Amino acid sequence: MRHIFIINPAAGRGDLIERLEEKIKLAFEKRAELEYEIYKSQSVGDAQRYVSERCNEEKDEEIRFYACGGDGTVNEVFSGTVGAQNAEVAVIPIGTGNDFIKNFGSADHFMDISAQIDGKSSLIDGIRVNDRYAVNLVNMGFDCAVVESVQKIKRKPMISSGLAYVAGVVIEFVKMPGVKLKSFFLDGKKVEKDELFLCAFANGGFYGGGFHCAPLARTDDGIIDFCLVKPVTRLQFATMIAKYKKGTYLESKRIMKYVEYHKCKSASIDFDGEVSVCLDGEITKMSHIDIEICPNAFRLSLPSGIINKTSEKNKYENIGAL
Image (cartoon, rainbow, N blue to C red; front, side, top):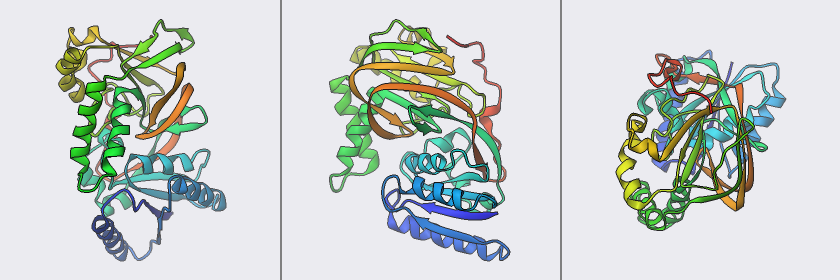
């Protein structure tokens, strides 16, 4: 197997990337029989292009790509393997959010290069979004607006990622943005909604730096978990955000007056104009969106010692399809 590390220099601090490269070098010095390569992406989209080209060039050889960056890098590397039977993806989290790996274990375990090399792959699902893919989550509304604000704030000097996120939440909390809809279908059934505060189509359960928005989500069940928050007041949102973050809101009858949670395989939405949509944390503008689950779309390599916890039975299994 060929081991290729895709490092996004924009995802982490320079010293963090230097330490990572040193850890990779030391790990493979102990495994002289194995060969590895390091590729540093040059711009947005470059990692996906590079991975796709390598998959096409080396169809007869098994390749493990290590996505070294944040959730955007993870998305690009997985997207580059679409249709490739010879490729699997491991994740080394050096970004700011690193939400995808929260479905499986701690960041420390994923930073263990030896455990990564000894990892084994299994099939997970993906979500097709128009002509693109998401491996973790697609969302829109308030939380997507927060991401937009955070990205603008982080461009300013001397602003840490943590402070930028807090500032982004405060800014959007004042605005309380929503999303207006022309039409909305889940699994071909029309949903009578003309506005929403936020919604998420989830393969994995976490986003926004650790919000457990989809506590039932499993990455290999062939199902999309859909969470929708209806338009709410600032006070209503303030009283529910803690449980929403922890993923315990399904236990609250009071909160569930404002939240809908369904399982589906597809969705189609016409927005009232262009809106911002987050695909694994990366924002794009869309006026129409078609979403569908792609079972067994990707091969994910987990570090040795980690079990895919999202395959375990969930205590909320009584919540079913729309």
